[in-house]
Image 1 (spheres, rainbow, N blue to C red):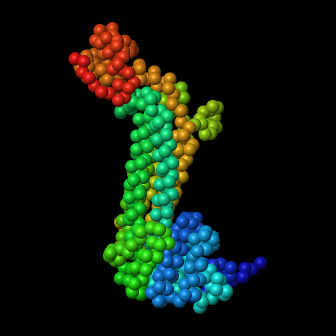
Image 2: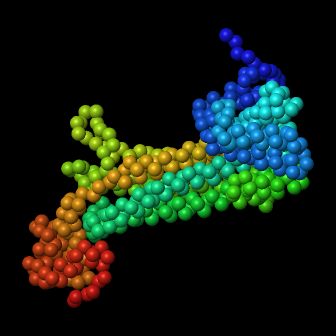
Image 3: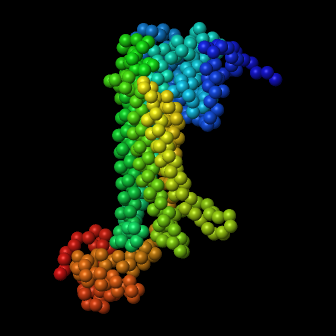
Length: 470
């Protein structure tokens, strides 16, 4: 069997391209050259839609400044609209890891859009005299302004999704804090007993951590509204017509309902990748805090008989192939692993940014791949953590009450009333005899029962208003 082909040519010569392919010769060469990760552009639909938005915007702007005719503009816009509607994404076949600073990605987009536009005009794929990938779709552009602009649009979209999933997790922690608002447990420092708290306070602290990271990521989104369209190759604007940059910014803002604007210094903007580093740093910080929460819950749910057993996590699956009845905290465990990956991603992005040379950073493809991957993972684990762990978490009230009321840490609440020396004496005796702080205070006649009960009431231990009695 033979497959029908069409012949195309480029700088390096002629090649046969599958006749039904929307991509062209440059995409084919990149497909053959970059067999690195096996992760193709079509696996990142958000990025493809962002590229289509850039190309649509450029076509409209080029028409407005008089360098692209109405018929060609309309065909390009229609082709871009198809991509924005998630059509023809299978034609984006280039590996996400690629040399050339994203040129292969840009040309994959240019060729698919050109051939779809040619088809819309009633001609055959590859008849580039009607709509040319470079002369028309890439008009007034370079990879070096089109790629980072598409990347920023895509990252803004990824931020929106991530923030929505973080909000789900935030609300899960907040709801759990309300549910457990009056449930006492021991707080710990150095993994040793400290002073009592409520489980509600603990989960409210988790919610606060998530909210703070949401605010940081939301603030970072503003960095992605500065674009370098019209800078072309290195930021000098060679081959971009007068007024083009302003038309791009205005049109892009109208199409996306976001406040895009042209960078003041296009040479700086073309080589700068600091916005990606800032986002990656915020993702790392979120991952560190989220991993800490997962660690805490794994530790406090340890058991069920020989551990802390303060919380019971939802049972998701059997935990052992050899130990019947064993159930593991698999959701917090996978949250930890995803967070470890995010921390590693941050190192990769920092290295890629730092190694940019002169007027262009050629490593934006690895930055794009890692940011897309990391943000997708974080969004997924936020929702999973909320719905498969936090929402179904149960407090072991009996175990927590025993820990609180038999704990030597109670003596801390008595310190303002008895003084440090007397409190130390009570703590030492409780430690040596195994007796309770409560009983020893009464036996030693250090305080009457009514006063002691008031001081050690749950409300006063957790929300103390100290009134010295000595």
